[in-house]
Image (cartoon, rainbow, N blue to C red; front, side, top):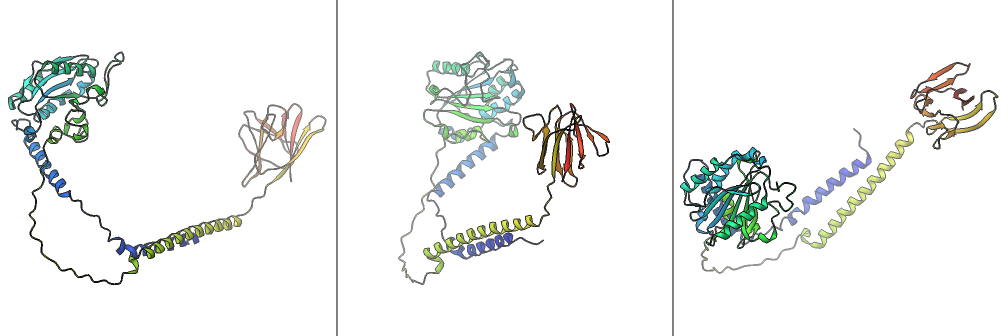
Length: 437
């Protein structure tokens, strides 16, 4: 395939750019990023945390494995936890996931925590008294209460009613603990009835409860990976910030409490006594590529070369297009004369000569090119390969009188090739004669 001049110029420009880049690469490669001083601390922290999470996941994967005390129990404060389960009718589709989610959350608790469980619709219904969490027996009691709960039957669930009932429960207890609300639901948004206008979404809790509790929303969905809930933290206690906790994605309950484990700094490396070193500096001639002025001139030269290639390419393309356009055969534009005549008297009412470079419309409307009375609308245009043609531009048919008096009916949308001297009957005793030059 033969290339155009612009394509050749662009090919040469690209090759020259890569040659300059290859020559200047040794100088640019000397600027290597420095290693941060705290990389060792960050790597040791990530390794320690990953080891803790792997050990906990290995101990808690099987459903029948006994409770194992998590490693963060010696670091975080005791909890006064409330496990609340959505009682709305839409939650029934994912209620089967509640037992698995409860066991996973219970395995992240510590001995000394207290847990009270219940379901919330338009109000909170408690499932018995609070459980003093001690280990396997407490976890089994929590699972037993989840299994015994009736199927969700409320039409709606009000988030504001749950939060108020939880604070009433916490205010009655004298023990000073970190308040934690675990919500098991199928939606992060409010499911309150339309008449209840004071409700809010779980990720938009009122500002007056900020810093007073840890709010963990467990979103149960059938499409969740490995049948696990999606865990979101939407409020943090007074000694923490929301940004201190992971949230969403593949976050697990173990990831939440692992943030309480302090990061141990790596052991300090003993430094040996300094050894005197003799340094001999030998100055050599600097390469021309290491001089900033040379690099600047080289960069400006490449930029000018690219700009010149672009302008030359545009000029070559325009010249080539103009040459190709000039070689195209020119199509002749027919010229015709329109004569509006009274058929009975033979009197010419109007006569005009037009070039058929664009379609001509004949009719009585304001947008026509040649006015003729009556309801008919005609369109004349030059068809490639056929010459001038006529068609009816509205739903009314036409009648064309050929040379020799032969009449021919034209349906709506039908094209008819014109001959000089053809006449169109427009009714009312008038006709339009078409003469081609």
